Image (cartoon, rainbow, N blue to C red; front, side, top):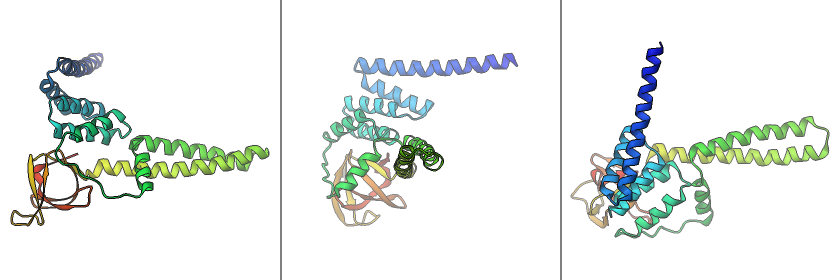
Length: 248
């Protein structure tokens, strides 16, 4: 039994050491401006050790420095998908978007919708869920104070604080659900074709609608065979070969 434990411990230590070694190699390659090598090593870490917001962010930086802007945008978006509050990734994403050809102006959105979306993006799904649970537990404490104490001040605090915490719990769980859906459904993608003509139907014989370039972010609406229907932020939509897209 001790021998088996020793073998498992040795295996775990070797795995951690290997992962740290890859990371140090990738960081060293990045520091000496060998961005292609750094990107290659970060990609290897993602394949062998699993995804993480930090790795996607580092990979995005390597691709950005190597002037591979579509790949940088893809990885910044993936970093934000896992950690919506990563302001560094969001800033660098804006920088990468300024380097691509297409500048899509979004249609007018009600300010309250924008504010709500920005609020949702401050935390990840797990963080919102934890906040929701904690708020609900504190809500129970507030209910206890209201029903089981005689002090008028404590009863008022318990009532109003409990009401507020209940609202926080409800909204937090709703926001957690929104973030979780974004991670599981994966309804957005980045175009990787240097230039692509968007069609009116899922076929080469479809009418040419407009032209897009690599790095542009689109929303996925439907899929028919080897074609995907996309929607742009400005409201335009059409069909594109699925193999020209990379899902975020």
